[in-house]
Amino acid sequence: MSHRYPAIPLDGSSGLGSQFESEVKKHHGNNPNFQYKDKDGAPIGPFAMLSYTPELFGPMMAHGDAILNQSGLSLLSRELAILAVLAVYEIPFVLYAHTRIALKAGLSDAQIALAIKGETPEGLEEGDRVVYVTALGLAKGSGPLDEEVWRTAEATLGKVGTARVAQVVGLYLYVGTFMRLGDVPAPTEGT
Image (cartoon, rainbow, N blue to C red):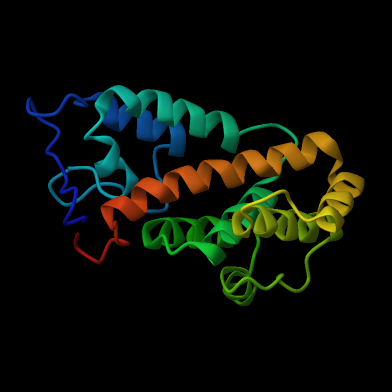
């Protein structure tokens, strides 16, 4: 739990109320493979941060859904793009959640370890390798994407595919910004 933004109970004191549970289930299904609330049912992680601005919770979840569920981008490619962001920014809760999702997407522990160190995981198909390299370049850079990386991405993924990767990177840079503000840790057992 963030010491800067402690969890707000989802009772009458929260503007989020019942919207929280329905939005999380709509976004992550009935059985997310990560913890999103504490033992008292209060939101944790990014959800705790969003409970301080309840009017943005629904739009943020809808925006995330649109980006994460866009057609033409596989679960594996999406997770590689997120891991590339995690190679640049320390975001413990996102690392906790997306390590689990990346395993479900087919990455091995060794591939995940390489990705979060900023090294292209071994054994990827060419398209997924290009996704990772492109996402890492976008997450690291402060100016235009390196021309060689761009040309490879455009040739391999096309303009649309490359734009889809950039959308995922942008979403996790946004999520990471407010998670870093809150100094949000990964949950511990019994949280």
